Amino acid sequence: MKKKIPQIKKYKIDLKLKGLTKSDYDLAITQLPEILGVKLRQFKNYQHATLESNVNIPIDKMVVLAAFFKCSVEDLITDISLMRKKVEEKQHSTTEYSFLS
Image (cartoon, rainbow, N blue to C red):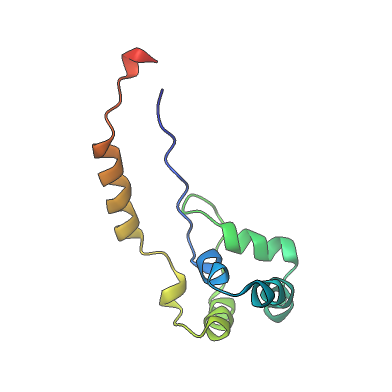
């Protein structure tokens, strides 16, 4: 049986949110969509966008998110080359025996 490779998130919004206290997290989830001028559903799409998804955050909204989290825009974007390396390492460390499935 093949192991499922975890979906790699395109943006680190979820990671930044998880670094907040519970009360700050709750406040951010309600205020960020309003600040960005998007519906909660769209914000959740931004938060959970994977590398394979078509979801992209416009640069003006990335600037707002960076200001909110007090980081650079680059800090919000997943380092794809690093993530690919981690996935490749994980794939090479796991031997698959397809004839057993």
